[in-house]
Image 1 (cartoon, rainbow, N blue to C red):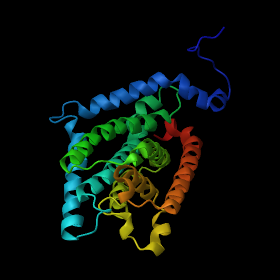
Image 2: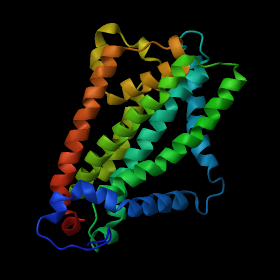
Image 3: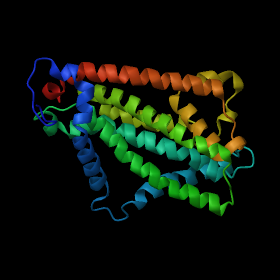
Image 4: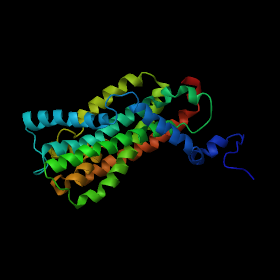
Length: 276
């Protein structure tokens, strides 16, 4: 009788049992995730506070630029700072997760070249690490709500659903870019530009309602538009409009990236040890 940790050498086994191996190597997933968490805050002066300060300071800048100087409208009577921060939380997680995942395989080259395990564990573990920062950053949102005496409505019960969609978005695009970054090293220079560019074309510092109606469907091709609008709708309630057709389009783009990302990753995974 074979134990769970028995090593079986069989031609094509890695292909046939790949997804089952994800469960068999779950302890490696926990180890990599915990290692990344400890390394992230080791020998840092402010430690965990950085996960709070980064989105908070960005929120202040966006509130001044878009709310005070450009005088763009908020959603309903919602304080502009809360509207911006409700979008900054998912965007900060997405940008950090994709950036870290894209370099995760290159950073773990020694591990990849020595032993077998499903390589997709590495970028997924880096995404989970950033999810800790995401949870910590909610502290500021609670403080802002208390300060502005803002009470969320019953829509808040749908927030876990949009958090799940956010995780799928980061995982799908992260896995796709990770595979490309291993094969084409120039991608490591392109990714920071794409992330920075995405910040300004996503409705983070402003409401999606300022986009003309005739461009809303086209604008929703950005998958983060549907995610951010969903977060605002859940946190701000009816004060933030929810564009259902746009969300469906964004959801379709996310699913497409998920399928494409897994396909490209699995197709190139066999060559990682040779070209990394």
